[in-house]
Image (cartoon, rainbow, N blue to C red; front, side, top):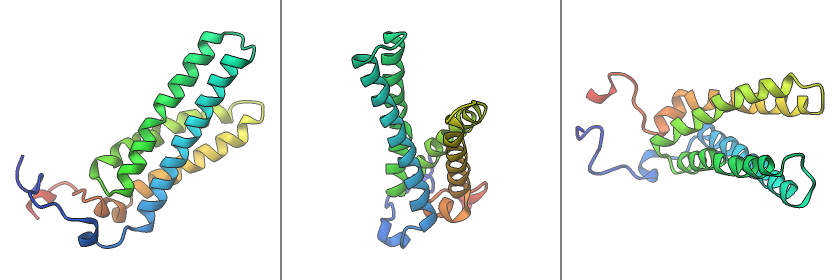
Length: 149
């Protein structure tokens, strides 16, 4: 790695100026999605342990899976708040994974439709915020050919 890709004296947050509102909003949306996954996973776990699910093993596995999946947006949100360039990738991946889920919720004939609308709006909004040039610059991500600068 060159010294430009891995600087020996990284800038502190104070040297980079105040955190843009777009970056804070993107981090908040990622954290919200992570918290929703934790709540959903806990609900499935509790239901699988105390209720009478059709398949207890599937309920428990689904709950644990949702809680583990919550780590991705929660870590991304933490990295975005701390202005870590690596955090944009997991945050974008989370939003891209949320779009098919939102679409499937919209195809349901139930109360899942409003949840699909909310999830779709949150995912698209977060994607727009994450690819915004202000956010990219605040995270220290350089575009193509930016290594010479």
